[in-house]
Length: 351
Image (cartoon, rainbow, N blue to C red; front, side, top):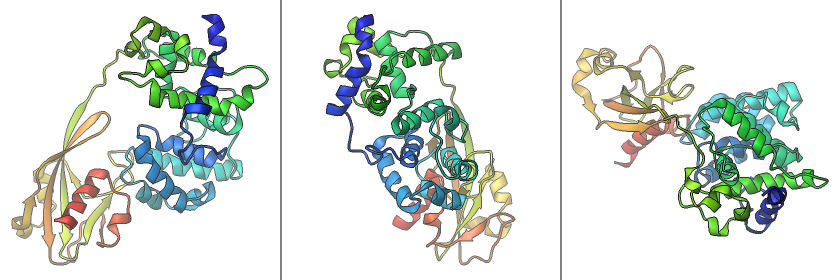
């Protein structure tokens, strides 16, 4: 097995060149801005969703300077619907730090990249290896699956010490020798591609896997037992009441959400902890205009949000609340809105 492991990186590199993904818009480039943007967008988001956002983002913010000088509202507006909005806030902060601390030039080592907002160890390694050939391992969810299966690594990844051991093991699989720097970009992309297209969570395509001769899990016939993680995700639920105030002209009252908190930094319909609190925010003579919208649930990573919206249709925009503002029918589609709020508002334009 030791001799085979020495050839592992070479198998991955050769397979990626012949069979890996090479047509994605952020591939075949050493531009760290494009690689960084794609890595952040791809966190917890599928490629098919990211492609459109990536193209629109580049059209609006073609380089790190353009992103750094943009307003956060503009960034969140373009990100709207992609979810996990802390990524967009960190993206903006990171661009500003690259301009302020690094003269607009991306650092070339994973160690320095990891000091920037929103860039963790695996993302830093991806940028450094793909763009600058640094010999450093990545370990996103897909690559964890590949490495644990290949090595038969069955330690519980719910424990930090075992995760550190996996990092060491992944580093031991990297290309070595004189060609290591040149091989690193394709090796890193190959590991990503293997996890995304072959070594998938359910029903992996072991028969076409380029490293099946190295794979402990494949030889044992139980690849789906890896990776091992025992800690169950604890989910919670929360009910939120939304005041959907809208004029006959289509203007909507929106309030910017505080940071931290749910949907931080985004524009949103005013939120309330109860129906009574919502009604208290509406003048009593208008209570008869309130109409309940069917309750719907929005699923977050750790929480289910049960959303109770009440629509208040007004003749004009003369009514004002303490915080927020009226946003015109032409303007609100372009501001940063949480996905369920955008869907709710769009429903009124398609009815």
